[in-house]
Amino acid sequence: MRIPRIVITGVGFVTSIGNDRAGVTTSLRDLNTGIERFDMLPGTDLPVKVAGTIKDFDTTAIQWAAWRWPKGYKFPQETLRGMPPHGLYALCAIEQANADSGLTSSEIASEETSLFCASAGSPRLLRYYANQLHDSKGERVSPMSIVSSIAGTLNFNLGAYLGIKGAVAGFSSACASTTQAIGYACDEIALGRQRRVLVVGGEDVNFDSLMPFSGMRALSRQSDPVLASRPFDVGRDGFVGTGGAVALWLEAAETAQARGATIYAELLGWGQSADGTSVAQSDPDGRGLALAMHRALRAAKVAPQDVSYVNAHATSTQAGDISEARALRSIFANSGASPAISSTKALTGHGLSLSGVMETAFCAVCLAEGFVPGAANLREVDPACEGLNLPRTSLPSAPRIVVKNSSGFGGSNVSLVLARWES
Amino acid sequence: MITPAVAKQRSAESLNGFPPTVVSAYLAFAERGDPVDLDIVVLGVLQFYIVKKPGTPLIALPGSTRLVEDLGCDSLTMMDTVFMVESLLDVKLDDAELPKLKTLDDLRNYLRQLVVLTAVS
Image (cartoon, rainbow over all chains, first blue to last red; front, side, top):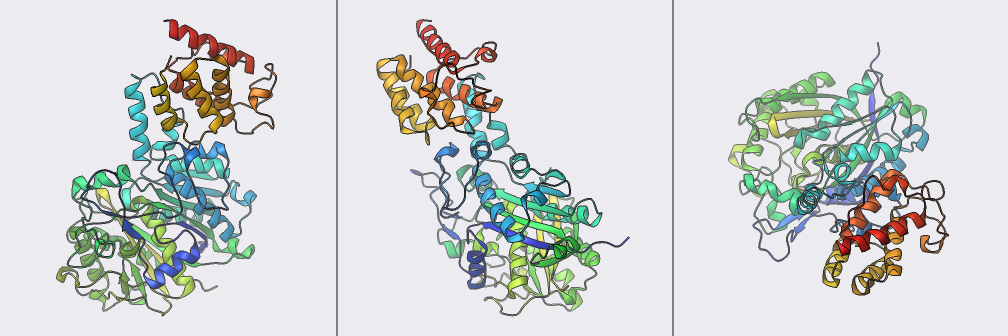
């Protein structure tokens, strides 16, 4: 049986560094940060001062009817009523991705199209509705409380909105979720079960979604937005939270070519592994992530020397970045390879379960546009992270093969291998 | 009956994004207790949650207008409406009564009676 080639045919962005492809491309190329001062709980002096904020949206109200979003998007009320804030971002990202892909609504709402999603749910709405129940002694809670707040809210809402009939699934492996979703989407297409899969990730950006990470001392306490997220830098002190939504269409190449679609990149293969060590901290030696990369490269039939760029998972935490640096050295340096490496979380902040699809879409843009984003905010490389090729500025050279890494709580590691499209 | 101070607080929290006519009728009802204002609130909330909006405000439609057949109310629309009305007015709609509410008049009259009974009790 011939295994179909799999390609990316559409992307849509609502991110801290841009709310469309053009804006995101400029930010990635010019290393424009999306991180800014963010007063998450007015009237207090929180130890966490910055976040990767979403511009031109206002989702501060609990009631969706009071939300504001950029002109040009129109969504039905029956869809909005069950949505969390990141559901609104997702609707906008999907509208862009659908238009970008050129897919018709009947192709999307077919039995050969699937939807894979991930988000943490909406902690703010969960808290609000739990309070409603407590305050009313169990008498009263919004009928939309469950579908708008729990993990799975994106699949529930978007599957119905788009009329998806192939399959709808949610992924819950924390910060590896949407990378894993992309991997399994590839398998679905490769096995001939689906012609295309829409992968969507989203997260709220507010006190309730971000501050719980403060309990693990995982968040940066820097107040300067350009110093706060510094992957691989000796001065890093934790990650900066962000949210938003990104949508990405994966499609069998044959199907995409038959309908004349514009192709961003090819997904050559993927691999995953588990650390089996800690609920939260990465394996200090990077063994798990190295295994995921090894498996991805093997599946893609690519040698480490052929890789031009690695979009690292590196979130700017002390332990996580060192773990990934060791994994990268074991795969590349030990093979004499020296791909350019950067973590675009320096610009965006860490999008949690959104980050995988967001950064894969960034890679797709870089492959299509022909540049490599530099390692922003990096001033002095942590000695423990030395031996990596970390360009301080973006490179105008077109990458041919790109590796995208993600790691999540519980030791989930996922790597994707993407390539510039050559028909 | 809810007090004007409570109504002011709840309208800011729960009616954010609702039409100003609904908000002002709610505050007026808390102030004066006029059932005409109550009707505007109840039907305004229902109108807000109806997916396919009728061309005419519900308050101006005949009382015999049917909720499901004429207005296309689905179960989620009704549950959203019930939840909001309960939250605003501190009343508890009887689950057994809900299926009996077939028209705008049924809904309007039931709420008028319920609010009075709740206030008395």
